[in-house]
Amino acid sequence: MSVPAIQTALQQMQTMKAEVAAPALKVNLNVQPGVEKVQSGGFAGELKNSIERINALQQTSAATTTAFQLGDPNVSLNQVMVDKQKAGLAFEMGVQVRNKLVSAYKDIMNMQV
Image 1 (spheres, rainbow, N blue to C red):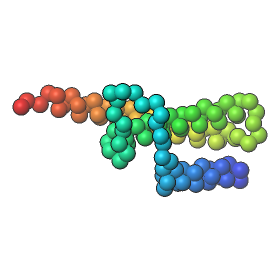
Image 2 (cartoon, rainbow, N blue to C red):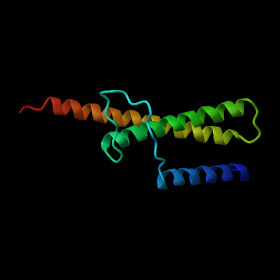
Image 3 (cartoon, one colour):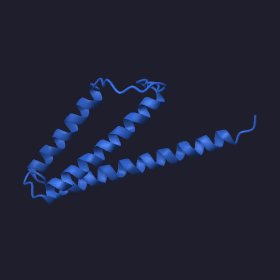
């Protein structure tokens, strides 16, 4: 692994650490009537944050792939492959969590009172 790739990975880990340590306060100005706000710290909030993280990983993967294809000298093939694997694993984990939630919902709905 080259020194720039290691530095890039270290920088990404430091930014992820900063995001986890001090989450940004987001203000939703497009509040629709009848739609409740998602409370932070609750199950719905964690689910929303997880989906947003998966989306961010996929967008990062697409951006590094495009940059590599365009010949950006700061983007290496191993960085592209690592980003693609991160995005793929995150998506698969999200699908598995969804499947477990649907299964649990069906089990609850089939319970007799």
